[in-house]
Picture (cartoon, rainbow, N blue to C red):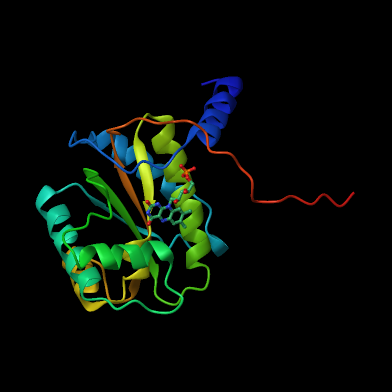
Amino acid sequence: MDQDTIKAALKEAIYNRRSTRSYTAQPVPEALLEEIVDAGRHAPSASNRQLTHFYVITNAEKLAGLKAVMTNTLANAEEEAGMSPSLISLIQRAKQGEVDVTYGAPALIVTTNMKGSPNAPADCACVMQNMMLTASAIGLANCWINQFFSLGDRPPIREFFEGLGMSKEEDIFGSLAVGYSENPSTAPIPITGNPVTYIR
Ligand SMILES: Cc1cc2nc3c(=O)[nH]c(=O)nc-3n(C[C@H](O)[C@H](O)[C@H](O)COP(=O)(O)O)c2cc1C
């Protein structure tokens, strides 16, 4: 690819990427998932420690199991001061019935890092942005999913991921739902925050 094509593709991915919250059941080809994960693996990391571990879940039974564990955990959770409004809303909905925090996506990429690593959140953000932009650039809908991070210390969730191979030394950080959008909507959202101050 020439420089102008790469620049145009990157710009397109940055400005047209959107979070998708409704997926079809169409599976994502393994080669495309590998492309996304590889972009994540090439993200910078503090001191180049490369501590992110990627769990790529496409097994329908495991995804259904995770949905059940999440619903159960949320239904048994109490609302706490400092919880985000979206987490409180999920807890309230789970007490009424099943919730699917990954919106039916056929693929889920969960990232972990070493427990206690001070730069883990920053490493995770770099990995996630590379993966979101790559997924968008190759035509795949995606969405950052935060609940496995915010509830990752609850025993049923830890046990689930340890059952997939996560070690006791790892903690969950960002996760990415990936698939094909049920309602493609790509209208850009207005950017009214993120102020900029130039000191010249
Ligand atoms: C750190 C982080 C956590 C997020 N967690 C969730 C989440 O758990 N569920 C969700 O639907 N979207 C989540 N999002 C997506 C944001 O809600 C979304 O990026 C924002 O509303 C802007 O919309 P856009 O991505 O379509 O531009 C998260 C985004 C970030 C950066």
